[in-house]
Image (cartoon, rainbow, N blue to C red; front, side, top):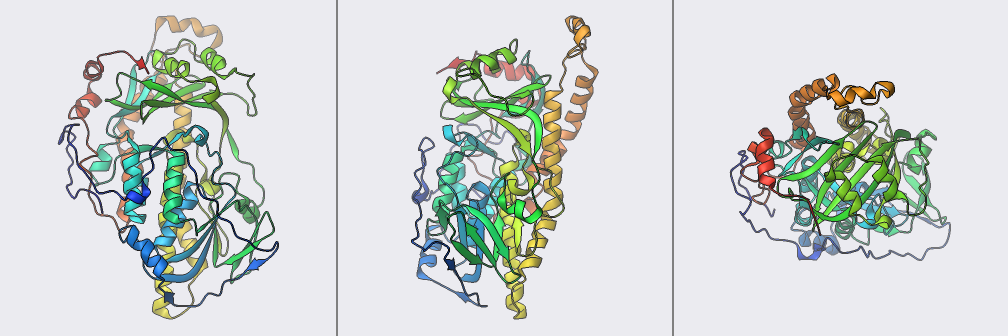
Amino acid sequence: MASSTLCYNSLNAFSRTTQFSVPINKDLLFPPETSPSLPTRTRKLNKNKTVRFTVKAGTTSTPTQANETASYGGSGSQKRKQVRVLVAGGGIGGLVFALAAKRKGFEVMVFEKDLSAVRGEGQYRGPIQIQSNALAALEAIDSDVAEEVMRVGCVTGDRINGLVDGVSGSWYVKFDTFTPAVERGLPVTRVISRMTLQQILARAVGEDVIMNESNVVNFVDDGSKVTVELENGQKYEGDLLVGADGIWSKVRKQLFGPKEAVYSGYTCYTGIADFVPADIESVGYRVFLGHKQYFVSSDVGAGKMQWYAFHKEPPGGVDSPNGKKERLLKIFEGWCDNALDLILATEEEAILRRDIYDRIPTLTWGKGRVTLLGDSVHAMQPNMGQGGCMAIEDSYQLAWELENAWEQSVKSGSPIDIDSSLRSYERERRFRVAIIHGMARMAALMASTYKAYLGVGLGPLEFLTKFRIPHPGRVGGRFFVDIMMPTMLSWVLGGNSSKLEGRPLSCRLSDKANDQLRQWFEDDDALERAINGEYISN
């Protein structure tokens, strides 16, 4: 594994100038600015033709797979298990699971309606945050792929992150995401372009595994196999089906019937600005708090800042032509320059809008030989940055359960118990996912109900705000967050690491923090002195 074996817990063990070179898999190099150009997999099959696979106990080894394994530094099994896994959806969750299952030696087929499609903010290469818990799971799945993701990603977990007052810009609460990671030898949180991440994963999974332009619209589970039907009428058989087809999952709908996603109450505008804050070396991301609105900014590397603007309103709203920026400036009028400057620095056509929905996790994730993964079963609000991370954790656990079931079948000489392995995966994941889903909802509530002073949002009593009397909720909320946040972050970022097999408990010298980080957490004045400048635009 291309990483340091040196563990350290001190926040000031190394300066920011320390460098540590690691070997890189050259086949996986993708510059962050590269637009994806994924090959389209084509198969000439007659319409309505069913492709059948005979599954027998035993394993085989193929030269192709041996070569694939060698090219990734021996990250996976060289013996192919005669179990065919069908995956509906080639987003991040579906591709990570496909990679995990492939590395375990299972045969995998991924059906994706359009690999080049816009996913979330992918149209403008919008980044996704991959926190320590997900990076550790990815390391356990495939160390070389994880190494490439971390090399390309922008580290934010080695800096100050937290909540600030949206109007004054003053710090409310700071988050330490660095210590929970390094204390457990985990990678530090990064952000990476969604399209770049999808590109890396698709290359690692292999074009022979991914069927592009293949939309799963139906499936039949007869108890011994699962048959999926594509939109074009083609059918494919396998031993199990994993629905990783997102919040509007067709697999979920067929399993449990139609059920509407839950509207959060907020619409979200997002954009990426060519903008370099003066505090770029000390601050990773900030959440600007307000009443019925909030704003999020994050460094995404390469001289760019990503931002999200949330506003409470009914779903389905439509902006006037070229009116997004103007509307945002009115909504956030009077807020601090840290937020407004990012809106001003973003081109009108680069601002996207979408309503925010989630799905409440249920006790039942699947039936028979079919299960769900990621957003298809537990779509989250983006306030914790854990939606994609939970899908990656799901992927590791599901692949582990399938391998465990295979090993048990080999020992006993009986057929692999697919149903039991899927139910075991679901039981293992339900509690953790439900807690983090609830945390994401609570984070949205706290961010949007924040009131700095008495009188805010009270209509006729708004005049009280001029007396600048601290709102009791603000004081009590800060006390609660100060007490609970370290424990919460420790559990979210590191609580799953003890279950991961196949990765060493080590951290990277490149995942270092400024030797003043601890002082910045404790002293706002020290952080202000470190900034010593104004925001500057490229």
